[in-house]
Length: 402
Image 1: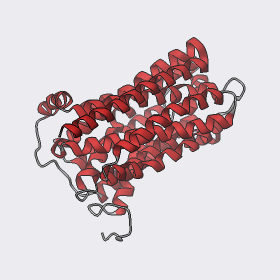
Image 2: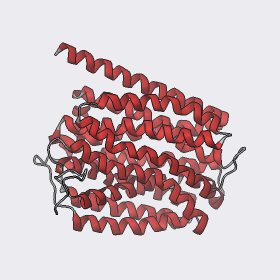
Image 3: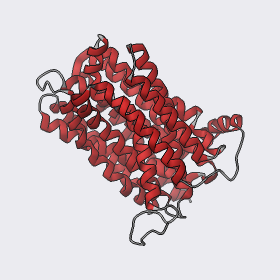
Image 4: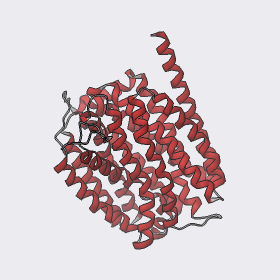
């Protein structure tokens, strides 16, 4: 397939292939966020407390992190296209279980299955980097991550609107069908891709620990992104609880529509990837850390004033995506022969941070409501910013020594 030279897509992949990979990533990752605007409706349907329904947010993140640790590294051993398609089909099964769940326990089980196998997205991201032309891997990651981020951000909006029209179960039932169709489309469109140095599964898992110990940049960037995602996950796990109660009293559809505001964060993805390619990753990291810090005072006020909440949501998503895209694109360039494992280590830490943030966010909500959640979110943002600027200083010291 020929690609116009003016197009921003990397020459190593056609624009249609990149768009399809972006769509697949968005569906896989976004499926783990359907529950966030629906917690009130899920709790009512199964006749459980809202805090019980909110446990599904933590389970989704834990399952995703487990899949990253145990399944995503297989990208360095198996044929990537077949692995991505198989995982995506299994994730569709998980969505179907959620959509037809007869009990809250079955719903939680479906959430775990969907989250575990939705790591197909993190097979496709390093695959895009591997197939990109030299010097354009950051841009390729940015393209595919744009789809992943839009999927995460739009999932809340689509879930809310579909729930208002046809009920919350229809969200999961429809997602299962769409994911299965896109998975088969991936099989038809993508080229076969395999690591040039395939290793055994045991070696894959053992080497991930070795990579974490031996790569300081991997450790630093994983920690910073994990703290940033923990901060944002405090918001994800409590926003529906605040917006559906208190002075605002919004419904599923309205809460979902507010999620559209965060889609602005996805616009940063391709630009952050390009900054990495130009050696300006530290700039986008600094922007991300500052945006994360500024967002929480806005969200605090936004608990009672919708305008401030929307602005805070835009800023916090911008901050998270600046940090994540920059760090992930940088990690992808550290050891090209171990891209899948490096990405798996990074994303495992990233989503463990999300799981911790959502669990602590639910606890903070129980203790002191919205004020408790915002205090916790700001504290985690401060830690992420401290890690970001500490990382900048260490890199500057290394450069000076060289």
